[in-house]
Amino acid sequence: MATMSIDYQTLKFEYRARAHDAAVHPVIVVGAGPVGLAAAIDLAQQGVSVVLLDDDDTLSTGSRAICFAKRTLEIFDRLGCGERFVDKGVSWHVGKVFLQDEQLYAFDLLPEEGHARPAFINLQQYYVEGYLADRAFELPNIDIRWKHKVTGIEQSAEHAVLTIETPDGVATLRARYVIAADGSRSPMRTMMGLESRGRTFKDRFLIADVKMKAEFPTERWFWFDPPFHPNQSVLLHRQPDNVWRIDFQLGWDADPVAEKQPERVIPRVRALLGPDAEFELEWVSVYTFRCQRMDTFRHGRVLFAGDSAHGVSPFGARGANSGVQDADNLAWKLKLVLDGRSADSLLDTYASEREFAADENIRNSTRSTDFITPKSAVSRVFRDATLKLARDCEFARKLVNSGRLSVPAVLADSPLNTPDRGGDAFACAMRPGAAAADAPVRVQGAPGWLLQRLRDGFTGVLFGLPGDAPALAKAVDGLALPVRPVLVVPAGHARPAAGVDVVEDVDGLAAQRYDAQPGTFYLLRPDQHVCARTRTLDRQAIADALARATCAR
Image (cartoon, rainbow, N blue to C red):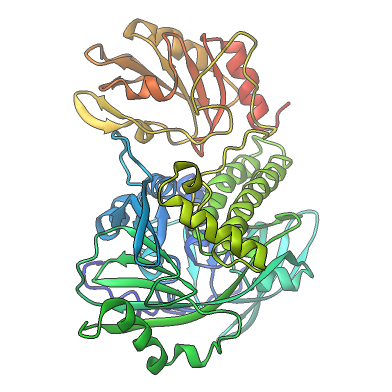
C-alpha cells in the first residue's frame, strides 16, 4: 500500500463478504485499534494465523492517544514499523512545570546518551493505527475483516464461538483463543457479564487540537493555576503537522456539550496564545475518566488487553503504552501454547503479570490525578504548599505530580523469573522481570543497537571474549526451546563465530547497564524481559530458567 499521500483521518477500508467459515482459527483478535493491531502483527510474525475483527471501517477519530514511550517504540521496532513512528512523530524528553506564570522546574526523561529511541514521541492515534494497519497488510497470515461486529460469544473446552453481525447478515466464527482488545466500553466484556471496577474522578477536561505555527519548544508544559485559566490546570504538547494538543481542566460542573462549541473553546485558546494568534481548531473533545480494571484479564479462552482490561487517566501517558505492552506480553505465550510447547497455564501468567502492571499504572495515575485535581480543602492546601516550596526546594519537586510518565513495569514477582543465585550480586536495574536496556553496539563493523539483536524468541546474552563463543553455543544448543546466542565483547575484540551473534560493546554502555563482568549471562524472554541472570555460564541453570519461564516446571 502506498503511504505518502494517505489521509488516515478519512481513510475507509473495504468490507468484503466471506463464504461460510467453518475453520477453527488459532486466534481471533477483536478490535483493530493500536492494541489489537499490535497483537495481530506480533502473532503473525511468529507464524500464527490471525483473524482480526473490527466493527467499523475507519481508524481513530481525532488525535486521542498521542504520547508513545520509548518502550512502546522498541516494541514497534520488533513489529517491523518503528522507524515510521519516529520519523513522523515529534520526539521529546524535557518537561516543564509552571505555577501561575512562573516556571518551577524542568525535568529530563532521558538525560543520558546511548539509546536508539527517544524518551517519548507525540503522534496522533490515527497515524499509529494507520502505520500498524499498513504493517498488518504486509503479513499474509493476518485476515482483517472490517464491519464485523461481535454480538455473542460462547466457550467450550476446545474453542470459543463468536457470533458476528456483518452487512450481509449473521455468521459464526470459531477460535482456540480470542483476544478482546475492543476498548474501554468493551462489548466483549459486557457480553460475558464482566465488569471493570475502580474510581471515577469527578472532573472534566477539554482537549483542543489546535493547528498553528508557534514558537513553543518541543517540550511538555504543564501549568497549575495559570493566569490565562485561573484555578485550573493546562497541559500543552506539540504534535506533527503543526498541531498542538492543549488540555484545559474545566471542573465537574462544566457542561460537556456546551464546552465543545467553538465559541467556548476559541476564547480559552486565545487566552493562552494571545489575542492576535492565528490558529484553527482541528478536533475538540470533553472527557472524564476512571482508574479501573477487570478483576482478572483471563476468562477461559478469552484474554482481555488494553482499555478493555484496564483504564487510567491520561496524565502520564499510561493507557495506550500499557496496552501495547499487554500485547507484547501475550503474543509469545499464545504462540508457545498453540504450538504445544508450553502448558495452557502459561496464559495465566499473562493475566497475573499485566494485572500487576495495571495496578502500578492505576496507582501512579490516581496519585497524579489527586494532586492535579484536589478534592478536599486539606488536599488543596498540601498541593499549593508543595508547589510554592518547589520553586526553591528540591525535595518538594519530587512531590509535585503533573503526571508520572509511562515506564515499563518491572515484573519482579513473576513466577516466570528465576531468582538470582546466592553469591551472584548485581548492582543494576536489569533484574529478573525488567525490560532489557538498549545500548549502542557494532555488528560486523556496522553500527547498531543491542535490542535489535534481542528478538525472535528467547535470547541468551553472554558478556565475554571471542574465545567464549563455542562455550555459549554449546550451552544453549539442544534445549527444550531454541535460545538465540548473543556474545557481547569489548570494542575492538569482535571476531566472527559459528552459530553465535557477536556484537561489540562500542562505548561500554551495555556492560555498564547490565553490570556485566566477563562470564555474566542473561536469559531474555521473547518480549525482551529478563527472566534469569548468572555470573557464570551454566547450561543446567539455563535449562532450568527456560523451563521456569515457560511453565514447564
